[in-house]
Length: 152
Image 1 (cartoon, rainbow, N blue to C red):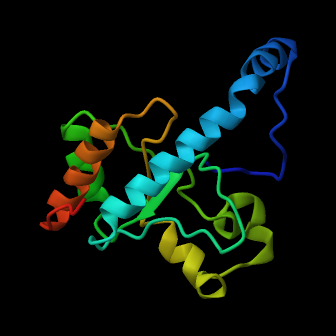
Image 2 (cartoon, rainbow, N blue to C red):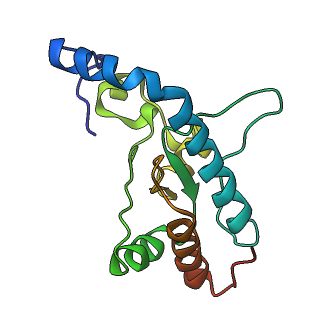
């Protein structure tokens, strides 16, 4: 996550292309499941201080990741890990603050939202096979960090 130069991610070799071709027929079904799980997460987390993804009206989110924002991110991650739930920080450094852009001289005040978000965002599990019981378990753990009950 410390990119020293600008680049791109283009790692589609023959084997990955074959795997993708086998998975493509399931894309719509998997996307629908991810959207349903994300909707459930959002509903169950609405009474917590965790900020959930917002989808603008007229748009659709496919939820490659389900990223929440919490001022108690580190405590939240520890609580989830202690209970067997993996989390990840997929973007620990906002783009303007990566070494490859240091020549631009950006300051934190130039991108205050990006700067604040990089220390508060965390991805919680989201994949098509996730069960309602798992979602309820995860949201209960999130709520327990904040000492609020999950309301279903």
